Image (cartoon, rainbow, N blue to C red):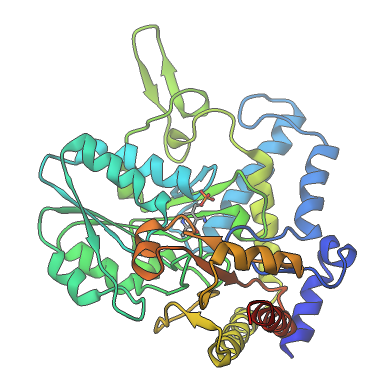
Length: 404
Ligand code: PMP
């Protein structure tokens, strides 16, 4: 069933129809492939006449604006945002987090605390590190348990009235552990801290309801959910967005300008300086339509089948060492081959037409803790099949023979 589903998905990608059958892509946590419907949407936009948004009264601008603003509605609906004004377009997750960190600087005082975790991607660590330095605040690390789960007890104990910001991943990009965001948000709000969620690795793999999660901000990138690079989303509660001081100036974010002073537009435009990635936003809406053509249950079951099968096969192999076994697990597995450097292993996998990644995966603190030399990671998307994992295991056998 799982492979029939994956084959149906693959039919919607020129890539899989044209690439030689042996080539297998297991690096979806880095970027997913783009289906024909999304590519056609980009092409159609330009072929049917492109204009800049918001500014002109001619039909090219009107059409662009209509598509661009409709895409905002599609995203707002999809993640159950309160209103369309809660959706800000950014160039990606990193850009969104930097926009939040810059925008909150005026709320942070010397001695305040900002909490991030061992699991965080550099994009959800370094902007907070910079903010802490700028404001003489303290950046503190929430540790993990031996299986890779966030240490919730430790986290609860760290919370106090000085904590102003808690920034965490929804799903860790390395080991795929899923954090209980609704519970974490409640704990943050008990001490009036803002909860910022990096959803880059969750958005394509589970339904997201920002109101149910309750977090103040939720951010993600298009290129990890079947859309192109260069587009991302910053969701914020209205009260949270109103706290953000703009840090980029010009374009639609302006309301009035004189030579001496300027005033800012209303949300969401206030935080969108310059010409936005119009076609990127339109492509995200198309990617959502692509994902939504299958019921959530079917998508979740497919990815869980892949995950469980991969864990079972990897665990049984004497050469493989899985680096974490989180309680709630989604889409990514970190592992090593015993006594083989992960970079060497990645090259050998590539020689066998398997695309997977080795290194620190932009998560140095976690890598230092689990495997300082780096780690291998496989990560799934809807087009992966169980047979991809069989091929991976055959490749591991070949590597074992090579090193025997
Ligand atoms: N956070 C997580 C958890 C990620 O996996 C990534 C991408 N690897 C990012 C942030 C950064 O995303 P982007 O490069 O699209 O800004």
